[in-house]
Image 1 (tube, rainbow, N blue to C red):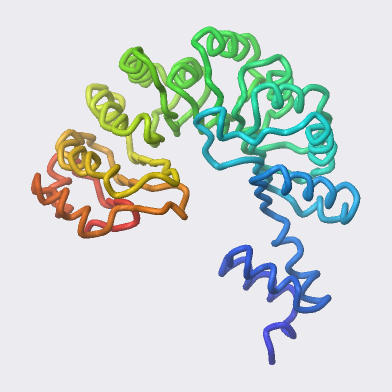
Image 2: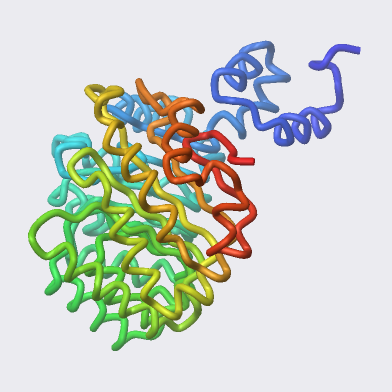
Length: 362
């Protein structure tokens, strides 16, 4: 019996279990009409649009060519996964923006929406947007606006918010005042991505247990991080997971974050997971990582968290042109005698998982 002749329900379960990549799903999708019907919900489940051409094609597909596919889409990502400056967002014309709005309005089963578009485009897109879906996750690269506020007020099921746009302290205060005045605004929020001002403003207001700190530039970095550290003691629930994202401009910020956190009693008692995500660009090469070796050799000794169970460093995107090798990493750690898990556990007794750029330290 060939794979394609198995009962449809079994094929669907097998595909879900092995979770193949999009290329494999597209091959299954094209085998015959029967496999097409089985694979279709999986092919269209997660949609990633990285260019204006792909946005245009997507809009045409769900509104004209194959509108029935819209019911399968549960996750839509427009733009890159991480957008830490406005130059990385997708620039959409007014016409394409209007088409994207109409396309989004057809996605009744959408659960996750990421809009890495310009600040003005986000406000225009959300203004007057009429949807029936209830999101779990919403990520954007815009600024505070009334259109954004009204959209979030209708998404009461939201558990994760990513705020990748530049956020001033005044904007953060306006939004936090709205949350204080309206207990029904993001009542289930558990995970928050943003620059320190937005994290500091919202952590005391909702049961947020996981935060991602986005890169911050300027002379007030230490002030922002100190304010963030102070907010941990005011959180509604313990912060158990902290992720820090940095790019070439802010390399080494994770060390400042760790130093700031280790002074906080709340972090010492409750923090279970630390992630460090490094965004790589096409011009990153091995020389850019030489300073990383110095930092990697210094900061492990600063880790002092009683509940910490997992520490992981990642490079994004996955297709980055260069990432440290196992020999690089062991060389860095050997300089301060931290190449064995037991060395890390001296100050972090609960630490059981250490992953450095895909390499498990064991």
